[in-house]
Length: 236
Image 1 (tube, rainbow, N blue to C red):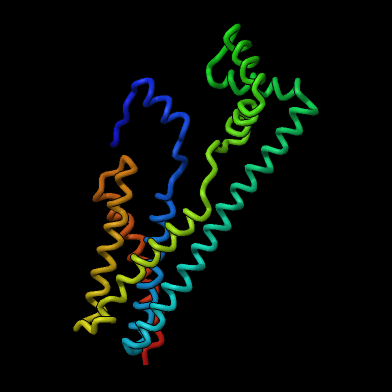
Image 2: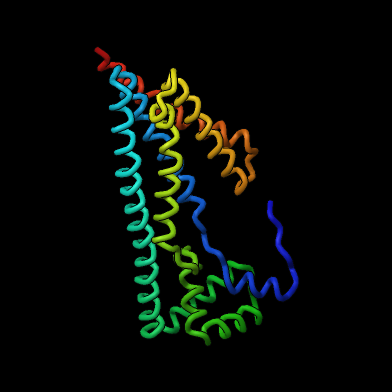
């Protein structure tokens, strides 16, 4: 777990420039989905006994089209989050203008939930409500449970797309290079990607790397197994 400094300057810089949620979720999401969906196509087509050319063609189409689709969907979803925060901010601005006493009571309740009481509670309520932006930011966090740092739609979309592209190409490599036993090699390489993604994301959690890797491997393996089973039903 990465530590950080606690000098006054380090604290001030860190608190005044919070990083937000970052792109970890987008990278993991894109990487897992890219490897799962591409290998699902590989497994399904191989199960049906079709040629390597068909596998590569369908796989490449999936990597590009589905990767772009996921990136566009993530962009739109993240943009919707921002729009929702702006909508809520506008609502709170109107409420503060029309019902200032009621909004002050809400601030007081939020601070009470944080453990303040007595004169300290009164002074904190007065101080926060004296600053319009601080007042609204507290309401967005305390009343709606939303963060004060807006996500970045384009950054989220690009992280998803490139993670999908990189992870999605790996199951196709044995077929692109005409490796003997391409399907078996593809299966092992994809399993390695599943495990590596899971192990990587354990860096940002308390789970041991091997457990996180095994969990992701299990999820991806189930998806690939289902695809291969369905494809095998159409084997001539």
